[in-house]
Image 1 (tube, protein in one colour):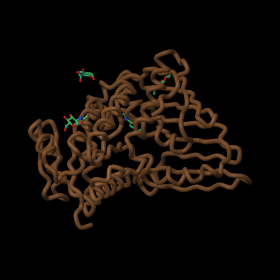
Image 2 (tube, rainbow, N blue to C red):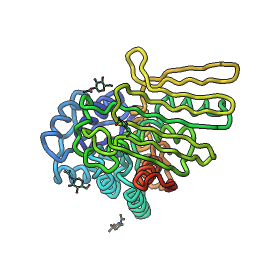
Image 3 (spheres, rainbow, N blue to C red):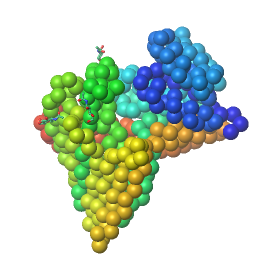
Image 4 (cartoon, rainbow, N blue to C red):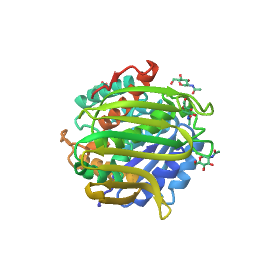
Length: 359
Ligand SMILES: *[C@@H]1O[C@H](CO)[C@@H](O)[C@H](O)[C@H]1NC(C)=O
Ligand SMILES: *[C@@H]1O[C@H](CO)[C@@H](O)[C@H](O)[C@H]1NC(C)=O
Ligand SMILES: *[C@@H]1O[C@H](CO)[C@@H](O)[C@H](O)[C@H]1NC(C)=O
Ligand SMILES: *[C@@H]1O[C@H](CO)[C@@H](O)[C@H](O)[C@H]1NC(C)=O
């Protein structure tokens, strides 16, 4: 590529250091990391130190002044917003308003109310702008090859009869995110923060969730509440299912199982040759079974998609109709939050049936 687009990362936490910088450096032929910003000078410097090996020109920015410099720098066409869940939407909107394309980390918003304000602010910005900035949300599951392949297999199981999504997580003190302070002060706790990935995978396979009825509990007091949720849900296609999530369990297990009239599809978290990923099984007629394993690569695929989209949008400058890949759209991320928000609302009402808000 003649002129790779230049981007900045806003945030310098664990995920920036362990995912964004390494994944971007693998595709440094497609993108230039121009700057890393953090509220504090020390954390911006620590991240820049890691990034410099692959992006020698990366600049270190901090505080209000650093943020202004990124906004004013017209060569920076896109930003990745990787901050605390409570402040991400405000920061994304600020950047969109400044004309930058934004890839925001999940969750798309902290609540359904925030989703609504976010969407109306984004519409106002787009109506005002000559070139509609792209707002993408990084949730990676819509890009995981196992899910992409399984979506294609959905026709083989026939009409859906039943869906199970079981998440027994391992968020204990050995996990680097366990003590992350913003997650401890986040309504919905780890259920919302982690749950959006699994709901993204679910929606991708079985379609939209119409309504839910849920119960929550708080069993492990070292975790923020709730740490446990069980929800019934009804899909738009009439099929019903169950979503079970325990944030921290002794023997982690994560699976989706979709039972159809002609077969059953199961996707299970696992590892092969030392690589983590998802194993899928298709049980068809006459006991025929198909099985495959794909290691995780959704973060890279998603970054490539965002970079491709912002390059295309820049080429077509002035063409306000440029449509980014729908799988990274803010709307998709918002729909995942809507499902979990409805579950949490239902749990707060002792399991009352709550419709999922549509966007
Ligand atoms: C629209 O543009 C005007 C003039 O540039 C600006 O004052 C206003 O804040 C913008 N509104 C939004 C929602 O971006
Ligand atoms: C946390 O969970 C992982 C995975 O189940 C386990 O290997 C590890 O021993 C656990 N750590 C603690 C402190 O319980
Ligand atoms: C927790 O979040 C609320 C609202 O999001 C905020 O007002 C408060 O300052 C936060 N507290 C801590 C300790 O971060
Ligand atoms: C989840 O809740 C159930 C019922 O309240 C409780 O027995 C279980 O220990 C909880 N599990 C975790 C991992 O918190």
